[in-house]
Length: 347
Image: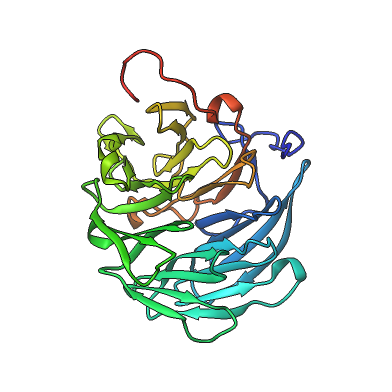
């Protein structure tokens, strides 16, 4: 369990939730955040071509190391041993970085277009990568060629893996479900229950379904079993009056099975899908939240605050643009599910 009480918030903390800032911050917008499964080491990828890692201590955040790609980096994940980080992006490659042993990064995967998503699958000892070239590729990192290439109907926009379940979201709102015990065959292909472009996915902890978030401030809760379809529902979030914002990130709490949403409205919220209620709405930050993640025991929720280009170049001011990475300590009341009281609105 991490204790962030000693982390300095600075004399005048600009964060409305009094979250702790990770320093030094990247020089451009953050595209992904991922915690080591073995400790409080946080990796961040960003549009300044960098992959950075910090050790989160009880009294500070210590920058540990960084590597560069040739172009913006879009995604990252850790190997299950907590020693190695994988990162992919606009240079169409994936680097494997043995960060904890001080080793140099090596290119272990390649596509014909930017790599948007990746995941390490320990049960298969393989890396899976999803690209805008409309393919999924599985890699044994000791071999130069993929062990399997799976064609997708469209560009890969989002991916979630909880073995044996994998769900891939593509352009045209298609969701392809795979059983990784038979990865060369699609288990099911469905149209997103949401009417707008898919932005993010998160598999249920019990692998019986998944969450899908869209650019239109909405989340779908979808069960895979045909007999459970009556339990499916969608709900609105990350909206303010007539302003509708993208849902950029979905993260299940590793202990309680509740989940967080983060959006371009600068807010993050905690939800319980089983009782269909919001557990906690956090104060909005002044800029979008493009990505977020829990650490391995759910005691830290990390999120980035920076411009995500959702309102175009005309709303980007390089003079005032700043990127922040913040750490929030979830209270049990924010993330522990509770039974539904009454029959009011689920929001």
